[in-house]
Image 1 (tube, rainbow, N blue to C red):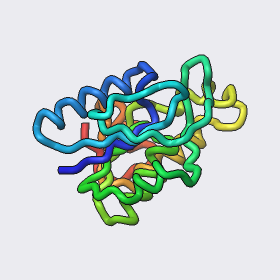
Image 2 (tube, rainbow, N blue to C red):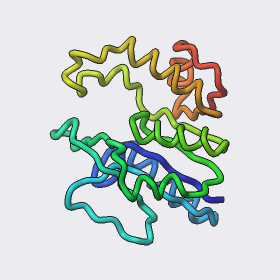
Image 3 (cartoon, rainbow, N blue to C red):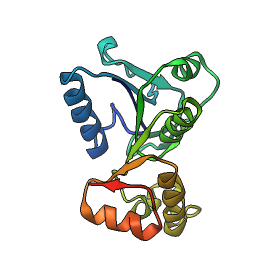
Length: 174
């Protein structure tokens, strides 16, 4: 299968989402799948060509944690992503790259799976110091986004229960 991994967190970041994505990609490739990683561009960071990474323009949103937000400016790489023929799209992270993956899956009428790695409502203080985005807003956005997916993967039973409490009706698997 040709699988698009749309992830808001990837190298040069180092965190649990990046590790999970890297290990899942390695295993799926070992099983013979063709994986493409769509993520944010980082200045002066270069990927190995064999890794099939497509980077989109981005802006920093947290310099201390080295987090960037993809902008979706009309550029060659973005147009190339829209032209790719994925069998399935797997989103990670819940930011603009994940939204792009969901949009492309809907346009192309292919399955969209999303892994809800992080309880974002516990991390609003990292985005604009928590002054604009509040935990209840994250809960509502999580519900809306997850209900737009075909399947949601939760890394733990606790996160599955929390997503259900937000009103997520789509299947959630641990």
